[in-house]
Amino acid sequence: MKKRASVASVGIWAGGGFAALTLVYLVTLTVMMARGLPFPPQEPFTTTFHAIMMLGVVVMVPLWCAIHLATPADKQVFTLISLAFVVMLAVVVCANRFVALTMVRQSPGLGRTAGLEWFEPYGWPSLTFALEVLGWGVFFSLACLFLAPAFRVHGLERAIAVTFAIVGVLSLGGTLGLFVNSTGLLGVIAPLAWGLGPAAAAVLVTVWLRTRAYDAGAA
Image (cartoon, rainbow, N blue to C red):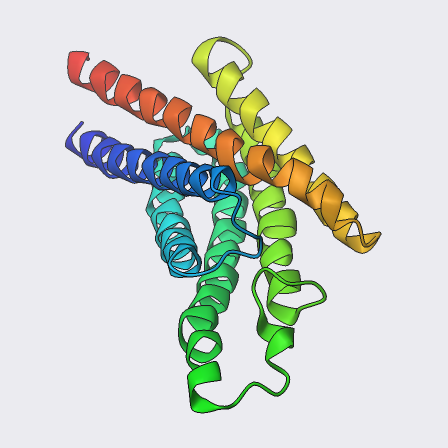
């Protein structure tokens, strides 16, 4: 029971942190758009977005670990595969955002701008933009789609499974948009597939972990 409580505690904090960071990102983006500021974002929004994204994918790792450990043994093959894809997502996104916060941000001041457009995180065509979509559109999509079967088909777990399945399908749709050079489609899908959808899933998972911890304590 102590083990389950500690797993739930880590997952609850990570899930709450991820949901909060996602909402901060969306609110900041809304403020920027309401002011009529251009996209790609300018400072201080650029640095804010990079920092939030790095923190967001980092806290996803303990959240997925908690989900894996809280899932019944016969379903853990799905959660383990999903966790592997989330780790891949975190590595890609952290690398991209670290490059953006260091090399990309400092290069103009150092007079080294040749070829910099290939590393613009919000520009297309761009190497880092493509890698970002690989992370969110492929790795995160697969993580969500593999996670959905780990939950039962009724009650709260059904809602979690459906949410992850929808997010996974939408994420793949965003990737297809990039393949056909439709960044407009990507812009329509992204807020739901990589913003509100994952935040909603994190909240549901947090409630689920709390419920499992309570049931273990009651037993």
